[in-house]
Image 1: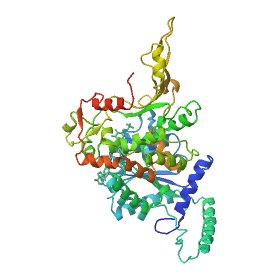
Image 2 (image 1 turned 90 degrees about the vertical axis):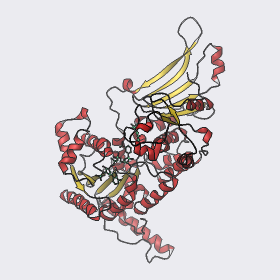
Image 3 (image 1 turned 60 degrees about the vertical axis):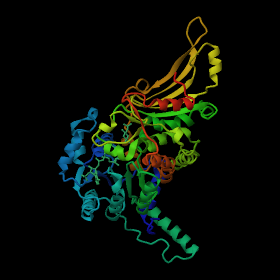
Image 4 (image 1 turned 45 degrees about the horizontal axis):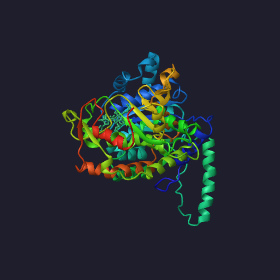
Length: 514
Ligand code: NDP
Ligand code: BG6
């Protein structure tokens, strides 16, 4: 039931599609698909969203449907001007010119403000025109709104979408509960209603409206909750797709399979066997003109509260009841809710030298820069050390490393006998480098995968509202202390390992560099 008490087919349609999308791979939706990129003039849209759509189009995921793409933002642009902006960012290796121009022809642009009734009505007219031209049956159309916009405008944009642009489904103007005071009447209503909706679904009138939201979802617990409440008034949770693009990365998606489909790992993956886990995000470039954004948000909000915390959940969670999205997300929430409050002595704040030289910039950056890769290290079983020393090994720790990017790989550092006459031990690796093992396989880009999930109604790799709340609960007290100047960043050299204090923290956690 929608928040306003109306029971309409949108909600039913989305939940029905969800179960179909997962329970049966043979079900295809036939309604006309419109993808609307709001903030189309911006950076994310041109670098990520449109290229991901192009990729999907090229591989036939969009061709199967009657798809049309709309760009919307305030900048005054002609269709061709938007197309020109995008063209240079479409993936080069696949640039078959006819494909590119066919794809670009799918794109129409509407200019308007984010609080403008006229703008959104014009957008709705453009979408409806496309749906009519494809002879889409009323109620069957699918509208995916991708908000590539600053989060400050999400609530007003969602309101405009809800008011003027949701897919048209006027079959059920009934107010659920109106005049149905007794429980029995309500039950009867539900049964009739459910039967009626089944007919609608069977008739192919299974359209939907979905909104994709980009991070950051709020700045702290209160602001995130406020935004969730505002958007929750307008759309039901199955319609809201909060993107954390790390959940679309190949090796992040591999974590659950790796953990729960390998007997080898099942008995090992616990506190008796793992002395510490490091989840490290490193970039070899600085804020690159995004200093203004970083001044406001900082690395904890930009990377740790979302990307790294998602990986943390997948590493730390218990085995879900099943691989259904809701079961997986339930387990993630449990992990988040069991995290102890963060103490100041467990935190090292760093800021690379030169950060303040960014024309926009001032504050701090946490250890999440420098070097080239994102990785996850599970450092296994330090008790073995004693035995290893007895066979002459000074190293001997087992590390399981998952390198998310670049050059995806998993490898296990283990101790073996040094080949030769002597009985000495040495460190070696069991190595699964994707480039070697899966030659010629193109690893899908995260945005492409996640947009496809949105079209297919699969929310597994998206952040649920209670998950978001639990994530903010962990970091908000620390962030407030930082905002109030109670913790100061330590300066470190660009390109270095970060502050040495961070290494000391690792040592405290039991990690020994080998
Ligand atoms: P931009 O700053 O490029 O903004 C996108 C568009 O929004 C602009 O072209 C502009 O369009 C409009 N806009 C900008 N500022 C405002 C404002 N204050 N009020 C209203 N409209 C505004 O953002 P990005 O494209 O970089 O990012 C979009 C979203 O994606 C953000 O939430 C960001 O945090 C997130 N994100 C971005 C990433 C990236 O790599 N860029 C990575 C991960 C997440 P116009 O003026 O034409 O209306
Ligand atoms: C974004 C952050 O969410 O992720 C950026 O806002 C960061 O600061 C980016 O650079 C990293 O993404 P990826 O996919 O390049 O690791």
